[in-house]
Amino acid sequence: MSQSIAEATVRHVAHLARLTLTDDEVEQFTSQLAEILAYVRKLSELDTDDVPPTSHALSIKNVFRDDMIEPSRPPGETLHGAPDSQDGFFRVPKVLDQEVI
Picture (spheres, rainbow, N blue to C red):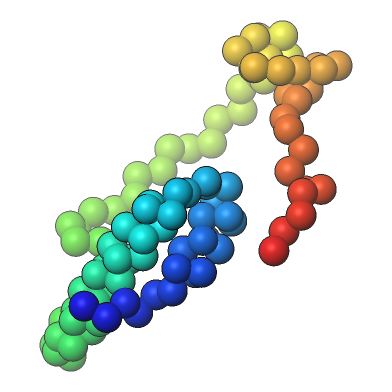
């Protein structure tokens, strides 16, 4: 099967997802993604003119509850399970200063 996706694309997507892949994994995922894209192309050949548009396979509806005003949890209780906090706030690693391709 000819591949319709380049290894460079797989490497780029892996970089964006912050994944480290071996050369063997890149080759494997390139092949698998090519098969998925070929299947999607095959599905696009189906005649769907008489098929009504749907957003879900089952006829369901959203069930929303009424908004209720409730007191907030105290900060100490909220931050109790946090892996890291500082001055009453969640502390998370910086991600925006990293180089992006």
